[in-house]
Amino acid sequence: MTDKTHGAAPRFGAVSSPFAALRDRTTRISWLKSWAIPILALLVLVGTLLSDSGGMIEIEPGEVAVKYNNTGLSLFGAKEEVINQQGMLFFLPGIHRVEKLERRPQIFTMEGDVNIDSSRASKLTVRANDGSNFYFEKMEIHYQVVPSMAPQVIVDNGLGEGYKQRALLTHAREVLRDEFGRFSFLDIADPTTYSRAIIGARNELNERLKGLGLEVTQVPNPKPRFEERVEKAIEDRQRAEQEVEVQQEKRRKLEQEKGRKIQEVEQAKSQEYQGLLAALEGEKQKAANAQIAAQREADKYSIERNAAGEAYRQEKMTRARANEEAYRRQAEALVAKIKAVGAQGSEVLNKVIAEQIFPQLSKVKATPLLRPSAPIDIRHIQQQP
Image: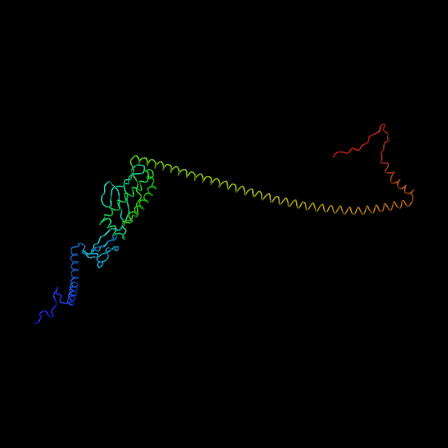
């Protein structure tokens, strides 16, 4: 009897041998593969039809998107992917989910008495360390989302603009109140003080928000407002300080004017002094020239007198030598004559002496000598010089 099933493919669930089981498993895998792609395409088509975006979404300038893989399978990409490029983004609805955040610089404002929306909250009030209260009519915080941390922003704060209320507003009020509350109302009224407080608040905010995916870029200096009496006291003090500054400016100008006047006087006196110095120098030069001229005249006179004296000396010496020679000859002649007369004898000598002496005696006058009756004391008395 012939088997009717011989040569036919075995049915599912029928296992006649190990080779038949292997053949059955291979058939099942082939069947699943042949139906997997159509089933996947059907799911994509259904998701596309049911999705509002239809599997594509536009990332506009100033936005960052996060694409999530809902299946957890690596076949459909990473678990989450940050998209920074603008343009159309394609995804598989149902398999992927796309969330967008604003990454352009934003402004969070605190003003008024009520919260208006996620970007505008009520005004900031602060209690100073001296117990007084003050507030800011308008406080702005310029911030932006860090694109690389967009998934963290969504995880911590939820979808949409929840980060503005949950992260920014909560920390901003706390940090600003702490930083400004360190000072008294007099300190905070000084612009340099609250500028320093603003810088400290911005740094502290960035320290707290850096793990939440937010970054504060700027906090413009606001103007604090106080109670009416405090405002008046501050205004009075500011007016007084301004008056002090005005007086200081006047004093500075007077000091400058004083310095300028002193400088002018010093310059005038310096010019006068320089003129006197020049005049004295001229007089000195004239005196020096006169001294040189007088010295030259004196030298000339000295030379002339020395020359005249030398000439007179030479003349006198010449005459003296001539007289010496003449007198010597006369003496020699007289000696020779005396010798000649002496040689002639005493008679001739006496005769000659008488001839020479007696004529001279006629010129001599004398009185009789009277002897004193008493001895005369003759002493030599030396005169004092």
